Image (tube, protein in one colour):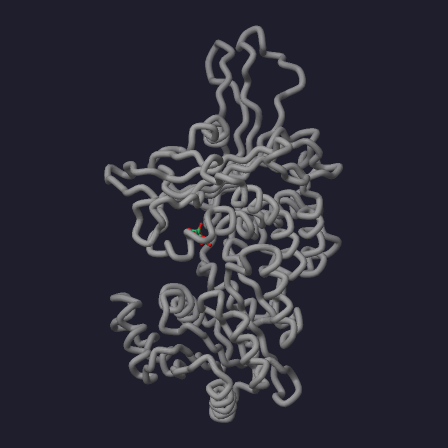
Amino acid sequence: MEQLHACDDRPGPAALEPCIIVIFGASGDLTSRKLIPALFSMYVQGNMPGPFAIVGCGRTPLTGAAFKELLFARLGERLRDSRAWHAFADNLDYFPIAYDRQSFQVLARHLEQIDREKQTRGNRIFDLAVPPDLYPVIAELLGGAGLAAQYQTFPGWSRIIVEKPFGRDLETAVALNATLHEHFAEEQIYRIDHYLAKETVQNTLIFRFANSIFEPLWNRHHIEYVGIVAAEEIGVESRSGYYDNSGVLRDMFQNHMMQLLVLTAMEPPARFETDAIQDEKAKVIRSLRDFSIEQGSRICLGQYGQGEIGGRSVPAYRSEAGVDPRSPTPTFALMELYVDNWRWQDVPFYLISGKRLPRKETRIIIQFREVPHRLFREVLGQNINANRLLIETYPEEAIRLTFQTKNPGASICLRTMTMDFFYHQHYKGAALDAYARVLLDCIAGDHMLFWRQDGIELSWAFLTPVLQECEECPSPERLLHFYPAGSWGPEPARKTMALLFGD
Ligand code: BG6
């Protein structure tokens, strides 16, 4: 039963400063699928600052009214009669833009006019919901139009939100950071990883460092291995253009999987402050043992073939629209990593992610060691399950701890039981969607849930040689194992999959 609430003193809506949120790529999918619903839910829950304005920018020539109509149509029935939507939409506008200097000068004047009309005080957030090749272009143009400057020509602040993918290797990530930094200081840049905004992912830190009973066990003496799994049922969907050039290592490992690993493995920060946390995270990535396939590091790459999911036949990856029929792009990967430090020496971290697996499951598995003395061996045989802790993000947001107990009755029979905690149990407040969380934090100027420059570069520095080994070897397809869609991945990964899913 919950007993006590301890809350931090992050700014409530009244303390959030007025601002204009400018969304580039406003007529695209990300805007209507994620950004506008998140902003609308924040508005309904009273989490938007007052006053605020949202300006959608895109190449598509639309009027403000047509933009609202478009969103209205895409957002579906649930908004049709909503008075709240109309009140929210009064703050929405559209600005057709060409990605050139002149257009950005006009945009700058347009934003100044909104500032005067709505008292938004020169505070701006620029959200780049555009293809990644436009990130540097927009950063340059914003800089050129004076829109990156803070507290100078304008009295207010200027922040830029960059979605993933943040580069496609170390070199491109460093170059992108350099371009952003020509105009924006690090404190103005918000690099999104939507996994960090998931409540259960954030809770990993609280769970580890606000309880005294787990931390003493959280090390190589008590933990046999750690599993980090993001299994997905969906295939490449309509994103083949991006995905076939990226693959699972860039799409999931460089960002989301790395964040889950880091949150599981990091040392307690000295203070619950952004930089102290980011410093500890960076240390984990720095401690990762060099990974070399040639020298025997374990990786298993897979690609889905034709198969069946939920009784429905689904095509092979190579037959998906827009995918090269001879594509060597992996849709599944298992990596066995080691964190070389006192806490984790020689504890394997199994990172697994794949598309077209039987069901969607996202979880961190902490497998504790077996008891040192098998007291019950004679009666029960050799195998007594060791304790296991599951931190689940999907399908449930839950924490589960398994332990051994005696069956009721005369004979000594052990059974494995699980204590479950469901994240929203006993909580009556409104839930905050992951995108709403990051937007809210950006408005509040809080960087805790975003990647810092060194973290992103360290992550690429670790992964880039692995990608090179995989992609630049004479026949990359030799490393690729095919698996039928709807199965638990390629054959060489099955044993580890069984280990991680055997709960
Ligand atoms: C995205 C990837 O970042 O994360 C997708 O580009 C993937 O390929 C998605 O499907 C998974 O996110 P979630 O929140 O559904 O686990």
